[in-house]
Length: 200
Image (tube, rainbow, N blue to C red; front, side, top):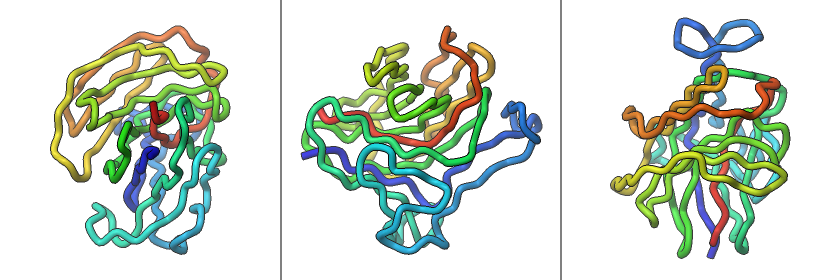
């Protein structure tokens, strides 16, 4: 069985210097909210690049009534990715609330940023089945682990935050910094969104 991953009604992408987000574009917060989207549809402003991404109703979501759910059951080495359309940022302060729902072998998920496409991006993800929180770079569909932390958390909604400025990246889980790393990848403006890691 593959990963099941939900994002609540609000995905917050901060692009304002006042909130420690940095962008070449006008400094302003961007909030993606799925509450106006119809259940069963891919939300407006997003592309379901890999996997099955649909809006679902969730009365327990931090932002009611909807969440964005990844529903595909995939084979090994499939990275499910949904990207926010019309976003081009070099540096971001990106927060996503997520809940792992199902998956026998993997339930990992988290935000994607500096995405050129569905095979080239950074991702920071938590996997409750492995009790870890990892930071990867994905190049041509192949992932490379850049940081790893042991992390055990209760079931339910959690916030993952990434702050990427120049070559410095910090990843946070529920407000606590879990990793800090410098990167060497290009800082060309690229898209952000979210995606679970593949099912092993």
